[in-house]
Image (cartoon, rainbow, N blue to C red; front, side):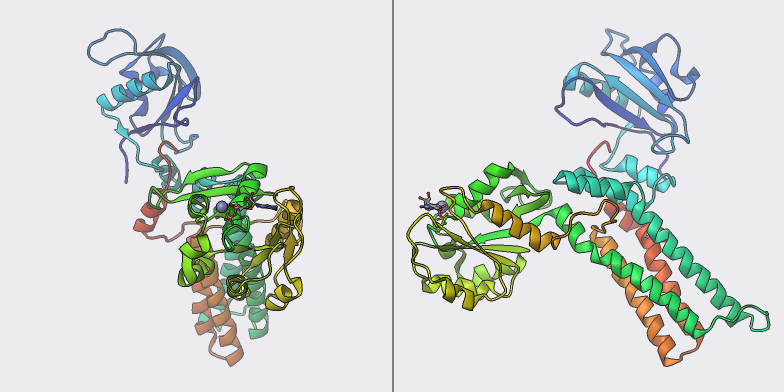
Amino acid sequence: METDTIAAISTPVGEGGIAVIRVSGPESISLVDRIFKGKHPLVEAATHTVHYGHIVHPVSDGDPIDEVLVTVMKKPRTFTREDVVEISCHGGMISVQSVLEVLLEVGIRLAEPGEFTKRAFLNGRIDLSQAEAVIDLIRSKTDRAAQLAMRQAEGRLSRLVQRLRRDILETLAHLAVNVDYPEYDAEELTAKRLRERCDEVEREVNSLLATARQGRIYREGIATVIVGRPNVGKSSLLNALAHENKAIVTDIPGTTRDVIEEYVNVRGIPLRLVDTAGIRETEDVVEKIGVERSHQALEEADLVLLLLNYAESLSDDDRRLLREVAPHTAIIVVNKTDLPPRLDLEEVRSLVRETPMVTTSIKEETGLDQLEQAIADLFLEGRTQSQDLTYVSNTRHIQLLKETLRHIQEAKAGLDAGVPLDMVEIDMKNAWQSLGEIIGDAVAEDLIDQIFSQFCLGK
Ligand code: GDP
Ligand code: ZN
């Protein structure tokens, strides 16, 4: 059990105006009170009230460090379900740091990343999928991703999973009566009805899993690789996409510092342009990547944009790339259509029969709309986004849903083979447990730590 009192700056670093320090734990009110000078002591304050005053040094009793508004919130109606004090400072980052320092001097501990949310989870305020949604929210790359994360935070997935679990549990209860108390005159649960229940659960889990691909796309972006021989216009395409869609350059936590990935938002779909440093820095990406390496880059990509030059006939390099790209999700971009045609489009077609093809002149800014539409067609399957779809986007959730599916399918196979019902019962229980892990029932302690360590400080 964690029962000490923790603090962290909970507003984004570097934002001007007011900064908020959040303090949570059993001694949060009394400890903050030791460095607070206001009209009344905080320990006498009613819950959910705001108090004007100054933060002063606990021993030297010198000049006030900052003028503050302090909000006192007593448990359980708080984010962490512990006593919470929020200190709004207005002296900018330096004074916030000073206030934080005196908080640490009176015995408050600096919170670990995600520790507030972790406490909220451990105290039953939110369930695990909601907590993970907070992580996703912090990391969201586009507005739509933020929306999805938010919706999950609101508990949509939790509610669905809980309903499924109730259904299974109810079935299990019926089963138990039939198996354990045959003398009990209960409604008989036939194998046929049990199978119907399993079918229902299977259908729902499957439809959740079907949203997983889209969810992952919104959360992580579509890993996109631009290939083509030198001078076809790869850098130009990258710049055009980035220019039209406002590229966000980020270094991704967990990868090495010098790996730079670029995000461009194409009709709400985040493209994560991989290896763009290579495209930007060298003119000869095909040579740089080489045959073996281009294979690997393609394997890891969700989308390959293969550029061809409309003004030149197909080269052996082009043919090799076309064959390489054929089995992948790709779009052939025939560029430089402003120049006289030399390319044999029939031959291109014969090498990649299924792959969508668009023609562009990046120079004259034509065809980019069609390219964006082709991307949207591939990844949204032409559907407009339904507002009430629940997306599953978290890898752990996807694993657990797959596990649930396996158990349900085992149960069905057992029923078909006519095994005793108490064998089927075990499979159903396993399915129930896998679902439970999504919302944090029966999760191992280390897994919880692992999940919460991904949070930003102060959340
Ligand atoms: P990369 O080597 O594949 O990255 O190709 P670049 O983007 O560096 O482009 C090579 C040259 O082709 C540059 O001079 C571009 O301005 C030019 N270029 C790019 N797209 C077009 C186009 O659509 N039409 C014409 N005429 N030139 C283009
Ligand atoms: Zn270039």
